[in-house]
Length: 486
Image 1: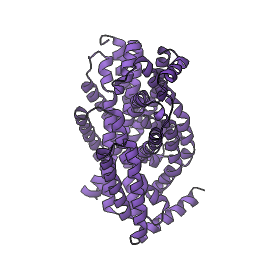
Image 2 (image 1 turned 90 degrees about the horizontal axis):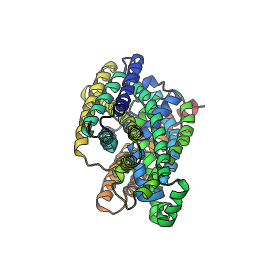
Image 3 (image 1 turned 90 degrees about the vertical axis):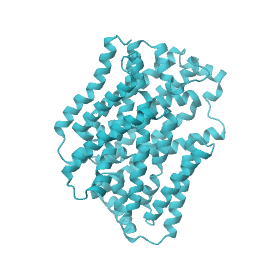
Image 4 (image 1 turned 30 degrees about the vertical axis):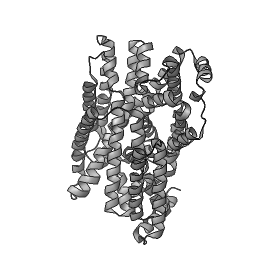
């Protein structure tokens, strides 16, 4: 396979397209922070949909989904529900975040918290949580599929070499075009992801005997594979429904997309488009259930799609599917690295290192930051064990903790910065304690911790002394939103 020039051509083309698109994007990018960070707040609804969808459809949602269908059956069908909740969050919260950001020139999530709560401690906590769990989720992307390039080329390109090459490509196009380059590349990645997820699912279900044969056999041989029964499984379904979309929506890359939106109309059409896109889950459902027939008895679920394709598909089609997985990886990784570089420039460098730095000088800072973050991510890639689904849930669960003070800052006039700090600390520590010391599933632990976070936040908001400035801003901003959105 390594000698097949068509396979190498496909891989090289996959690397080249984002660089070509970055060249186009680079010509439109102005030398300002607003342009590099937020596309000058002029992102239309279709580009926003493409980049949100591509970022949402990560290795966790491709390889991880197939693996979870294979191991746990219909529990992962909560993805249809969490697609809907993820879409709804853009309408309920994203519209307000966009409006507040436009009115008060927010660039990062910390800008929102800093303005409303006015707490330096909370700023550091939000920045820390965002960095730690985003870099962890970044690892999910990288460990999720780079080895597939090594497999596709018969070892000619090792997974370490492909990782280095792809990181270099990613840095080049991010450096050239900022968020606009990410958006252009994500449009290409989104098409590839949709086609390959559906193609792999329909192909494997046919190899396994067809839809009717596969599900008839599963009903006969392993009813648990198709029936959601038992309180534990239903509880897990509900917890995943809550944790995954909340965690993804609280990721720094989604804050940036909310701020970058051109108009309110984006938030009216985007949820509909995201819900329609959930049709791609048919592909992962078919592939995972076909795997139960083709490879009964369990095994290395994270590598299931690779094993099934290698055993049943011709080399060209197999490589095409692997590139779809790579697209899922890099469509999320590029957004995360861009978002973390923006966070460093605004939330750390500008806030603590050089407060007088002019806006035009923030762009070079962010560019060097994305190079440094990419290098750190690559080194971590070499060291961190590979476990896609568990790492993904862990990362999203940590980010989900931020939604409590966000809802408070948008709707609850008695909210207080000290209550937000205590809630986040207690919720995050409780989550880690439950994950380490209890037998509960990670997503169930996350929901319990989220409940403790929310309870702490509400109780302390009532008990602690008033923070007049925070209360004034919450009330005033709510009124401004209601008046300005009409």
